[in-house]
Length: 131
Image 1 (cartoon, rainbow, N blue to C red):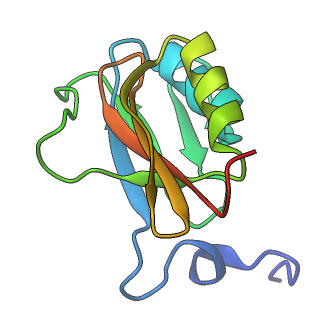
Image 2: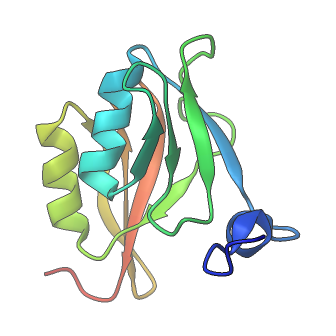
């Protein structure tokens, strides 16, 4: 019998054409997991030593990997939507991130890039005016 309240893979991450899985480089997996949980509200699963995650929407899952080089400014640059860019930057910096590109307007959006504690560069953005 199937649990009708569980949407399963088709209802969460298996969306044709959608980004669904990330392997994120990490120097220290628990540290990276704690950073993304605390700053972006990602849900952690699995063991504390080898956690996996669901992003804040539940549509993207993945793992942190110590066998991958940090993702710097070159290549694909993921951007994470936040509701308060300034508060997110403060939280990220307070947990070991570094500001790479200060906030700048892009139309009615505000965008910045940070380097997470493992050295990965990621973008953060919010819609509308800054607080």
